[in-house]
Length: 97
Image 1 (tube, rainbow, N blue to C red):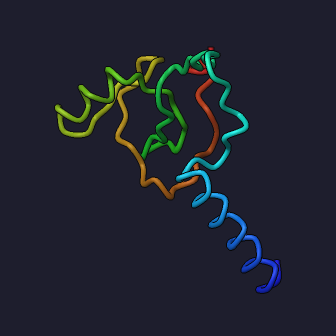
Image 2: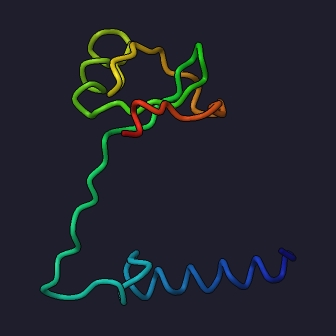
């Protein structure tokens, strides 16, 4: 994207945010209609040793933080999380079920 195009779009976004007091998409909000909450099995965490991405429930995340950083995945694997910038080598098939 060219610099002039980037500046133009960032200006458009800034004006829209100011106009809507920080709400970027007011047209998506309908009064009186609540959007259904998305159910998630937890948080995707990449194992630091195997580089496989597992799902960790929010309860297991809380417990892992209290116990020093070792987390239990939905599939039962105990893992040490990798760096957040570390790319995974795939997803755990047992956690995906």
